[in-house]
Image (cartoon, rainbow, N blue to C red):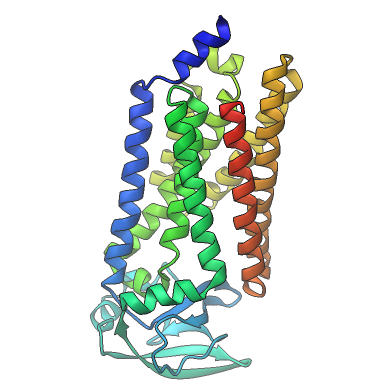
Length: 345
């Protein structure tokens, strides 16, 4: 009878379910609007990776295929003599005025160990060439397809168990992963740094989604899966407090590394909570759910941590394809295992 009552409660929409659904729709809509806006901005047409030694952009792929003086592997460290630092470029009104279609700007780059100045003419994105570049990039294509599968799976789990807080939290963090992946299909580069609207929207995606909502979703999932932990039952506000903390860090400490520490801490905290739950659960169904759920989390977040570590150590610049492929596979495995755990079959 207890299992039947809990099952009926989980299959019904409640106020929290509708709020989660609204949040997911707004997040996906925001990502689409961000992509549409950045698509209208002038660009040099290249796919880039942000580098830190030296600071700047490493150019990897000419997505538009137009004739360009830039070569794959060039590391741009300055634009019109201004250092390629996100803290400096958005404040330059001169660059905002010069960043126009057809304008030629001077890129300072490191090529084969030597510093050179190259004139680059700006163009506009072309939809057909952009789509073709994605289809020709197996890593990007696999990442996008994996996010479609994950988002479909998370949505299926949520609509089957809308009253289960773990299902809602699962849908939130899968939505955030998908939003980050699809936003990255259009390179940021100088256009995002220079244009104030694009800069604000990109910062919102990075800070509010990854540092505000993502830790909240992870910790909320851990506190409710497979059943609410005693501390959550005693203090129902505790999971929401983590979301408030994330928003405080985003709003009042936007330039501080403490936000990223909170992000990493939330990964370890959620896994620690799940391990504690696994060790303390006694009934057969809950322990079976925990084996699937905890195993999926360890696989997915282990690869996520490895990806961030590789980026911090500079390894990501050398073999980004391998890291992206492995991460896409790991997140799909994680999503499948967690989905099975929540639905209990």
